Length: 433
Image 1 (cartoon, one colour):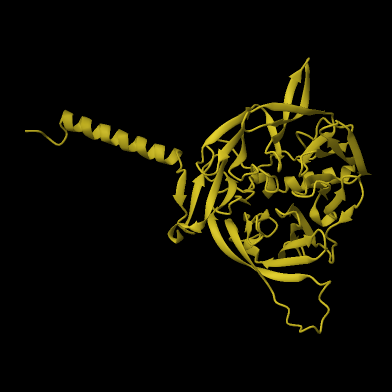
Image 2 (cartoon, rainbow, N blue to C red):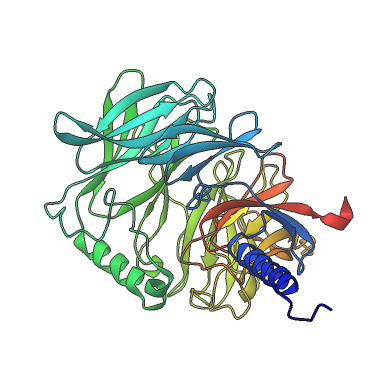
């Protein structure tokens, strides 16, 4: 008669126990790559596979002109993701910094670090995502940074910084890119101190435009302000937006200028002490500049818009928990998004760790013509919908959400699984399809 602890039965139980333990271990270390968020009902999919992969910064174009594919970065190089099939294709390998995808040709512009004749050079390149043919465009001198490509891909724009203390810098990869700051550093205010110290340096700087066809460089706007976040209009090849970087309450941040050096314009004029504006971006049609506005800092929250041609202003109000590190607007200008923020950030939101979809509503004018409203701000409100619960996300990595060209998905980066990866959340709920 077999006993409960017979060798045969004991071996079977041991094997089953080992199998179950291994299965639990795999489940804990291999997060799902597709799921329905139980708190929102929206489907989330992981687009990347290599740990350390990220979608681009929220205001950089990652999409090919046909809207079918997007660029992501990874520790091993640059890849394209097919947005229909989610298949990935490695385009270029190495230590590369993506600038953006060209709006006209779909070429991917990036900076590569190359060793040549015993020297290390930074080279601006472009690569065709179909043929993978690489073209070297220009070598960067010390102090030069390239940040953006204009709408017809004839010009690069960047900054030149003059300084004599390149060692012991607070910055890596150039004067305009902060080092990767850990979440605990945000909490301890390290990033804020870095910003304060860099602003106080008052290094001489200027903007420059590089003609891709001729190799000629034009400089303008020489100053001692900290120039950063250059963005060409997605539709007007002669219009550049840039910022005066630093703690937002200490700078007039958002500016535009023409590529011939004319038309320097401050986009937002402060109206109260500690009012801040920043994280600016163009609408897809290039007609509006949108930005985070707080009146004053950390107290009242808006997404504000400035019409480039008319100067008309639109402000949408939102609640403290809805404030986001970065906002964005859909290609047809009907929807907005926010990537949320944690309690240590400027809004100190008690429940702000969500990805949001915002439905804008303008407040109607009931003055019946008794008030001249043509120069007044048009106000509105956001009605929010939660897309993804980001409670497991560490906001030391900013999600940088952006709409897919077909407006079916919101694309973002996250470390919710323990490693940086690129994700997308479907705007329609699973039960609405």
